[in-house]
Length: 156
View 1 (cartoon, helix red, strand yellow):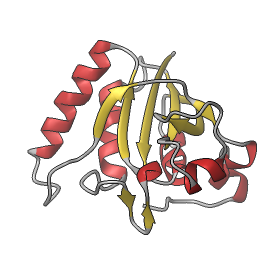
View 2 (cartoon, one colour):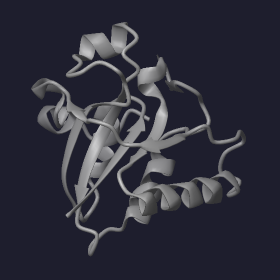
View 3 (cartoon, one colour):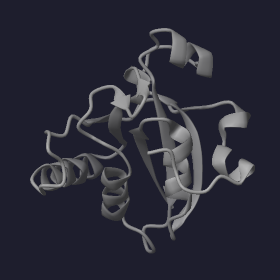
View 4 (cartoon, one colour):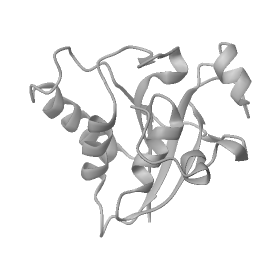
C-alpha cells in the first residue's frame, strides 16, 4: 500500500472522486500544511491556521499508479486559481500536492509541467508541490460525506 495526499478545494468532492477509482483502498479527509496542531473544521475555515482541506489516499500501486492519481487530480479541479475552487475562496481551498518521498516530488513536478503544457488550461497552473507535514483527520461527520448521503458526482 502507498499513500498520496491531495488538496483541490472542498474535500468532500475530491474524496468522492478518488473513492471511485479502482485500486484506491481507503480515503480520509483532513487538514495539512498549517501551523496549528489538531485543527478543527471551524478553525481551518474561519481563522488563519494555514491548513488546506485535503484527501489522504491509500492505494495499491500494482493496480493504480501515483501518476494515474496525479492525472485524476488535474482533471477534477481548476489548478489555475489561487486559493479558490468555484465559489469556495480561501487558502484552505488551495490546489496542492503533498509528497512524502523525493520520487513523488519529481513525479508531481513532471506531471504539473506536462499538464501546464497540455493546452487544457488557459492560465498557468498555480498548484503547490510541498513536503507533507502532519495530516490531521477531519471530524467524523466529514469522512465519506457524499457516500454517507448517497450523493453521486462531485462538486467541481
